[in-house]
Image (cartoon, rainbow, N blue to C red; front, side, top):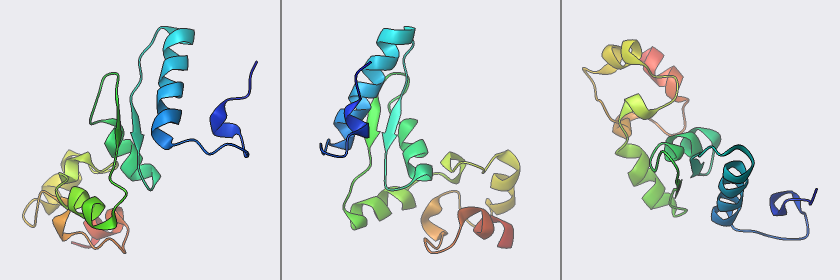
Length: 113
């Protein structure tokens, strides 16, 4: 079995290329499709993976201002861990992430408000 590029320390491969390789290998080995999200952290990558379902990928912008704009436009329902109950709890304030302090944990913000 060959060593995948994303495990190599000598080769720098763009994230989008790694995602394409992963999706291709999953498709060839399992006949299943998958979606991939690329972002600066696990939570945002998960959110991004939902954008081009069922068999696509989405890379969040790398520019901090563009990334902030993307996050502020998100529905709170898209944030992992915020379901119907927590959404109902905060719906009087906002249904988007625009009020969330990016320095604080989203779950803590929901609990405090």
